[in-house]
Image (tube, rainbow, N blue to C red; front, side, top):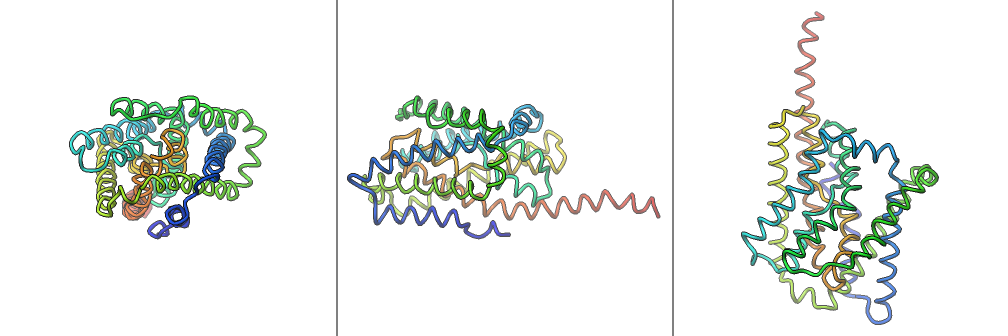
Amino acid sequence: MRFLKLDPFLMGLVSAVLLATFFPCHGAAVPVFRWLSIGLIALMFFLQGARLSRKAVVDGLVAWKLHLLILCCTFVLFPLLGLLGHALLPNLMQPEIWMGVLFLCCLPSTVQSSIAFTSIGGGNVPAAVCAATASNVLGIFITPVLVGLILSKHGGAAGNPLDIVYQLLLPFILGQVLQPWLGPWAHRNKKLLSFSDRGSVLVVVYAAFSDAVMQGLWHKLPVAEMGVIALVDAVLLFVVLGITIFAGRAFGLPLKDEIAVVFCGSKKTLASGVPMANVLFPPASVGMIVLPLMMYHQIQLFVCAVLARRFARMTQQAEQHEQTPEIRHAS
């Protein structure tokens, strides 16, 4: 039940936002933090490539029967729901906030929490590992394309395509090339690299919100709109959870596979999302654009923690039901 609590990473994010609010970087510090953010983003995706074993990548890309449904939820259902919401209620939030919601919808799934919740719920953990891996690998390629399509449709400004190549794709590919040599070291130092990843995200968040604060973020964003963002995020999550549960049962998936679909198909990664936003959007817009993602991150932890416990009871009851005839037959 630890997911019901505020995790240290979220507290770090809040601290970074508060620090940027009261002590934003300005003047000569701005280019320093900008280049630092670029370097940390490239390092993060390089290490992601180095950590992923070739077998995990192949399994995540080849085992398509279960994963196709998860990938459709992540990269088709979410964007369609985001576009539908924007089309129905374009004036509900500011354009940059709506862009943040649409950006959230284009992101890949998480890895750690998807696997953890699938495990807690008694689901198919190997499938969750492969699905989360496939989502993150493909997301490096698919997310920039989806964001570019949405931006062109809504008249937004996209980042330089070369930045996407240099900061996301090439570091990841280089990490994969060097994985046979760096992989064992990366697996031995998982905690250190996790700390490095999260520290990198905190630096990027501080730099992004510093730019936004200097542009008058908190004057543009009323407190009431924060509640609207949370409501939109919650509705989006509950709709996707409902659809994934229905789809799993409509396709006749076993309960364990259904659990993997629900948790992998409804998650959105914050750890990769913030760096991607920093590459894809103008610096002055990043702070506001990542707000919906930061709020969605915590909402998904709360809701999925409760749902995982419910699934755990269901799987336990199903196992007991399966064992009962065997016990009777043996007696």
